[in-house]
Image: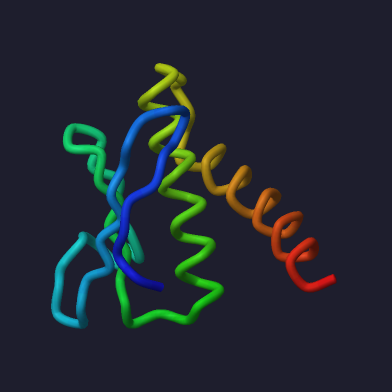
Length: 92
């Protein structure tokens, strides 16, 4: 996956794919910086893991944009469910 720009709910966001030695936190594959509208992903993961992580962080972005209070468990459940739908759709 490459770094770039995109929109979430009409807001401009940047995607930054970080190289191998970048630190995002405890075993994190990504991070949503809602103050600066940037989603960070680790480059050293599989393509499916990057897609899943981007979806997870985009859900956090929506949580911030719409002032929704989701638990991390709820975010993970949405990520898993939506990823399975999109992944199925992309492979058919």
